[in-house]
Image (cartoon, rainbow, N blue to C red):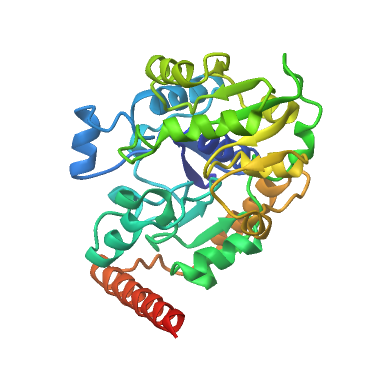
Length: 355
């Protein structure tokens, strides 16, 4: 009997390791891996290296390919085998055309961006989901199940328009066992850790000067260590940090986990690093309300999320239901209705505040 063929689509190192952990819980399958990819005009743009700042190119793609090679995983670049019983992906901002006909499981990768003006414009005009970044995670509807980190995230995704019948609260690998971070060693202790983001590398705005000076005010006399996001321009961003924080130490290209374990304070914006920092009792300064963080906090199940997700995969592989995908036109109309409803609700809230 032939083994079921399953494609795992990676991306960042976090996404790729999530996919690998799930595959290890499915020994009965024939697993293949690929970096994240697109089809159509976006595929052409990746070949022209116009999207090297995204997980489809540049550093992210190189790291994913290296990880696949180093761990002796089977590579099927861009899913060219085109014959799968199931596809796993950890992001649906772009869904390649060649996987839409297969059973698909979407796995949450971590924190999602909060909705901003890009989110609302993208939904109202029916633009590509990638225009609004991860705030539109789950809104392709091009999957059979969506495995999420917690009940709080389930509620958040439903509020944004995800079909509740497709969501499975499983916990997610890399975010389900923060206790293991506690004994990680790092060369410094009792410092203020500043975790930056790649918002500018992905064409969004950030006042980095204000962010760094605020971190300096929070730190007081404590040592500041800045950990650059893996996608940031290292030379340029390091010089920027040194301009405003000349005594800060700047790290890049290494795991942030040991830094979180040994810091006293974390300063960041919307990073997933907030979760382990909170779990380890660190003081956290960020752009998200701490009550909201606690509501969203990922299930801590001792690192068994991959096993739970594997059971969802087995259920889907055994299902005889045909693959049905929402037509893009119908999906746009649904998003438009939700966006109009949101705007009317906001207008009503403002009207009430007047009186």
